Image (cartoon, rainbow, N blue to C red; front, side, top):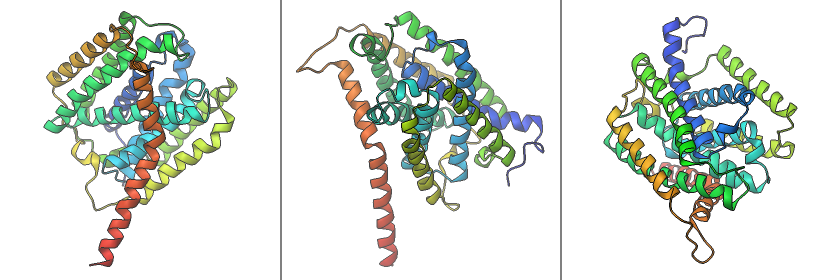
Length: 338
């Protein structure tokens, strides 16, 4: 049974909330920097709802992962779809839903959801650093993400209307450095003070659920007052979130190993691996940023990245549904033949 907020000592509360804050900072890095929503140009007032918004979404993500025993990559795809849909519909509707319903697939499911999936993977790598497989994934991911980021930031302002102006390499890396320093500090604090945290500690108490709900409601009201909410997208967005949540709920298992079990208590990734990954990410991004535009049969570097996002967005939920349903049919077939 999860202790209530009022019963927990201050040290326990800090230990439980530091991983949530770490994931929130990672989510912010993914959406603001990797998708390059021009964070350097945001008014200060925007951060007053963005920061609590990312914290609330990270808190919900870990709660669902622990509460419903998320245990494999397909569960994580559903989990991060909930994050991506929520971020797109609530935090960034003015860019994510500018051409609804097309951008629901390309920018929400293909952008925020896929980035959320990568970021949640990075969170697992940081808290499960003993795994050699995770280290290899980290280095490979650093190359791929750096490649896409350099192309995205360099050519989007010239070839699309997604960004107001071209960001220099100095601006890109300067903004990224601010976010990465915050992430590094939270990673250090999590490694130091969250050594006794286990997955059940992420299950929210009723009081915490109420607090997170109030934050999200207030953000919704603020965004609605700014006329940023896309009304026609509310019902489809809520329906997809409920669909993903319902599938996660239906797959809950109290007997099987869960994904978070090998990450909490955390086994922090060695700093040397983080620095190597950061070097690969930065070098790759800088290299592709400085390459000229290459046109082949009407395609270029940016269109390659765009088609990847679009393909992921249109296939994300159908792919997960097909895999999960096929496995469910296979389990029933095996039961009938035993």
